[in-house]
Image 1: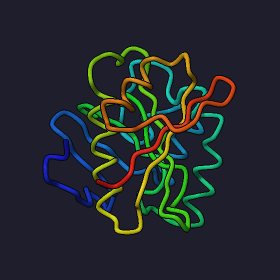
Image 2: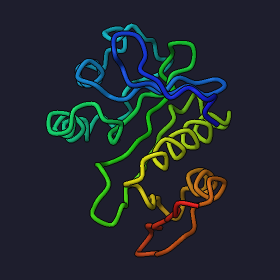
Image 3: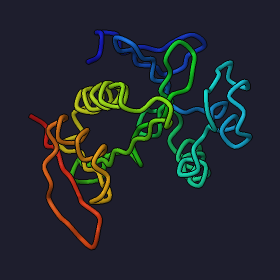
Image 4: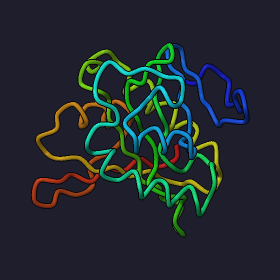
Length: 174
């Protein structure tokens, strides 16, 4: 899904582009805007509340990850369409000793069912597997979350575990 450009954007920001989307790795400016729920601080707009509550609750975790690792891509990424925030996706840390990273994603409710999540996740998977240290990617979702299950299946993840109502998924480097 990447359009061939893995790049550093204007002002040194880490960015990926797809056919319709721009993915921008979280940096301290994005963290600040998210903490203040103010996309205008990063010259963006949002059609609904951003960040969503799930992201807002863990924004300090991503801020700490940035303070330890800098902007390296193994963190959260903002998903933009024409400068409008439509969601976020990314990784919870750098690869562990086995080469495993965890991916997560969320699209704002008004932008769901338009293929954006699949496009963004596909680009992030390609980006992750372009790093030799990454050998597999895991994900978790609730058993009842049919949209997330579909995205993971489309992107060649296999269900590896079901505990209570949470499914663990895994995709190995091909």
